[in-house]
Amino acid sequence: SSSSTISFTSGIDSTYDEYVFKFYNIHPGSHDTDFTFQGSIDSGSNYNLTMTTTVVSPYHYENDGGAALYYNAPKDQAQGTAFQSISDQVGNEADQSVSGSLRLFNPSSTTFVKHYICNVQTSCLDSSDDPYSMNDLSAGYFNNTNNIDAIQFKMSSGNIDSGVIKLYGIS
Image 1 (tube, rainbow, N blue to C red):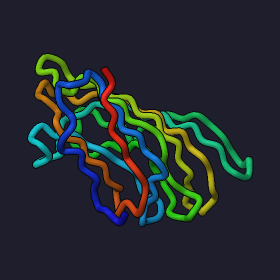
Image 2: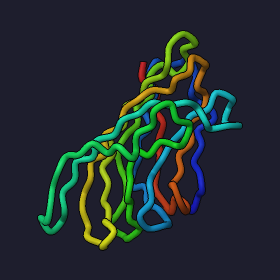
Image 3: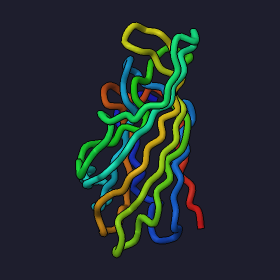
């Protein structure tokens, strides 16, 4: 509750080939903010790894005022080091939150880059406060052959008001 960041600085090692983060009702303290993540190779001292990413965002308005599948170009990174948006425009009303998963593949490899796939469902508000549901799908890779040993989650502005993030190792 009321955390500016959520960091996983242990439990990500060579034990498993895949790690899955599950998000349950992540609710922001601020209105119209992005839920983001970034990785670290120094046990969480720095979260600034180079990433290449892509995002598509199908949505549907609650009032049937519109629906579409679109390529969310502003959320992409081309060899960027910013925190990656995995859900945007999250509202902070009681019926708005983010739920879904992030899959990180082979983070302990010292030979290959580290791929990820993310699928989250979001209850959002647009700039005129019209509610809609979005299914953000993002994928990409950390362009780094060092061991990724920490992942941090945060909102692009404000705190994470409430929610649960669980980490699972998949063999």
